[in-house]
Image (cartoon, helix red, strand yellow):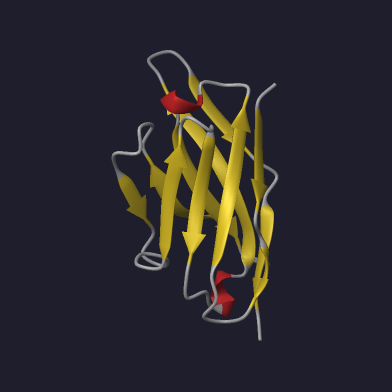
Length: 120
């Protein structure tokens, strides 16, 4: 069974840091592009960051560039999101996404999300 399980969320003060983890199982993790998304309260889901299957290329949304770092460990089937200088606008449910598009099949897997709340 395909599973993506996020962890590491919580309550932090503005300026604080958190590291989110995404544990993957049930699929060929090292052939998938990994992404992080978030959904702020009352808003639509938004893209945060992506990393290619072997970790060679990383891209970020402008809203988090310079503050967040996406990474992966293919030996452990895990992806990570290191977040620094967190601000109240970063408050959201954060989701891990695994994506692969082949010539005949698309794969798009999602975790259940982990809550990040930034407040003083």
